[in-house]
Length: 59
Image (cartoon, rainbow, N blue to C red):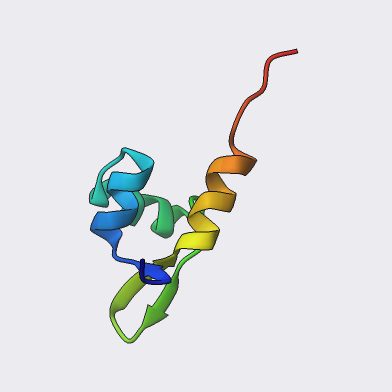
């Protein structure tokens, strides 16, 4: 597995849409990402951490 995910791969992993990820980037929320010029990529480690941090555990 490559260390960086495309927006499409990240959206599939998070079960959301590429548009929602773009909107989250615009709002400054959502998983961390890196930019190379105009290209947006998501580190897989950051996606897994994002999911873990947003996991709600019942009492």
